[in-house]
Image (cartoon, rainbow, N blue to C red; front, side, top):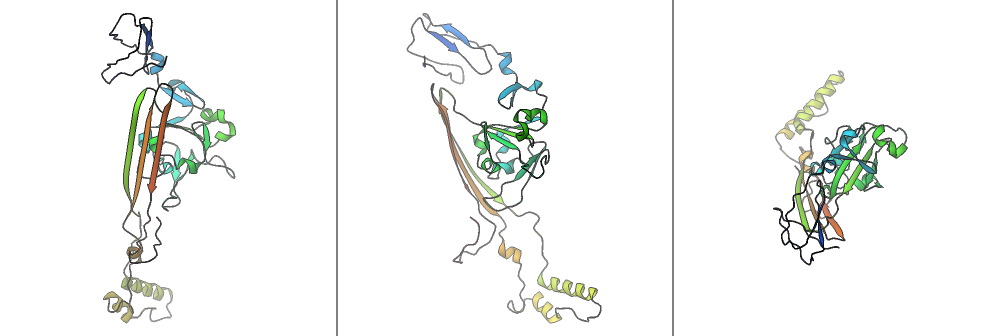
Length: 310
């Protein structure tokens, strides 16, 4: 029947609508099932025995699972909690987490900062070089991978060598990435998880520029060194000193364009909410995420047009 219940954290349970001919089946992951006839008992205490086969660690291999100690191929599994970092997309979170995965980012544009990655280098030249990515056994593109929240992932595995990817044929030549999403649990209460995140982006290795007077002196020095026939550099002493002491900002401008154009940092926000649960016949997992990325351009609030990326 569909009549069932789950125990509390200390193992207590209650179940009603039973008769003497009914039997109760007790089950738990990693333990052998037990079936006990109710009879005239009103309290039934059960100690489940461990199942050796269920407790052995398994590894997802293509369309099946296999004992980890019998896997000869090179396979890496990542704990989904390690992928919960400040970047708003998943491909950036892969960097430095998996041996053999090379990840790099070409752009820092907000909303488009997805990284490209290879598994054990580039195996295919002139054709597709990205690995085969399977989400719940359905192929997806790298761009789709960026839209998956880390909170939604149940398991994340990378198949790296020929023995591990052989079942996929030529499609697995550049490695295979297997992602399994979370699912609902039978006979469990609804669980609601909320993640709110605020992160800061700061330019790294930004060049430091000299002031205007020093730049003009260095320009004159370079010009005189390269061309011995001239006696005076491009900038006069009056221009240099006027710039150094700021005598007239319109005649002798000295602008630090780095400070004027860019902010010290930009703020990004991410919110994720998901629900998980189920009954005896239906399980469910639902999630939604919102990202807000801003750019580093420092546009004054008095301007009518905002050229910053938002």
